[in-house]
Picture 1: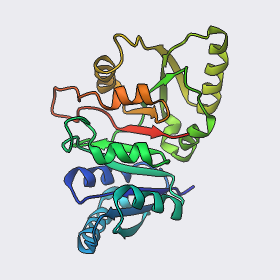
Picture 2: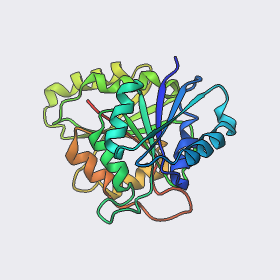
Picture 3: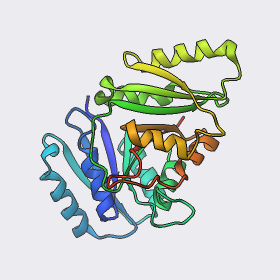
Length: 252
């Protein structure tokens, strides 16, 4: 089934790289809405879409250009509602703010303020099949099954192995029930359960592990403490590749 993907662009190199990455995602021909907010630079948007149409992975996809003079958040919210968007994709450079390293102020504001799944793609990130996913979950925050529906809309997730990193496993009586719920919601994908020690694993250690073996990190926006600690942690240095895998933010 085709999905509606909203790509946010400011015509930068990292925004275009995120758009190229997004063309690999649906698994079926889908609708890509390319949004530029803040001015009426139509020529730049047309150039961006023409380049995307020439990408090898663009075959079968439909592209739609959208210009809005609103600020980025208002413009994005309007398009999400008007076009029934399933997923937002945008680049993450981290150059615009010392406080929001590794992701960037605009990207951080979108994933916090727009109630739609958001995929952030770091600079120089090349697409790799989502075979190994890291999914940290704080059990002190209620997990709603509806937020996991995005997994059913992206066919390429069918081959993924989910690695659930468990935080705050205080209620052992409910642990089996929660794990069963995750297995059911993510089925038929395999689910591995690991424990995060908050004193040592969050931040640096988590990203070291994720950088070495994860193709995607999934975070829950409503789990503010955990997601912020991971999102705002400075990128792990070393190597010529992107400093962290793409991050998918779920709302609900």
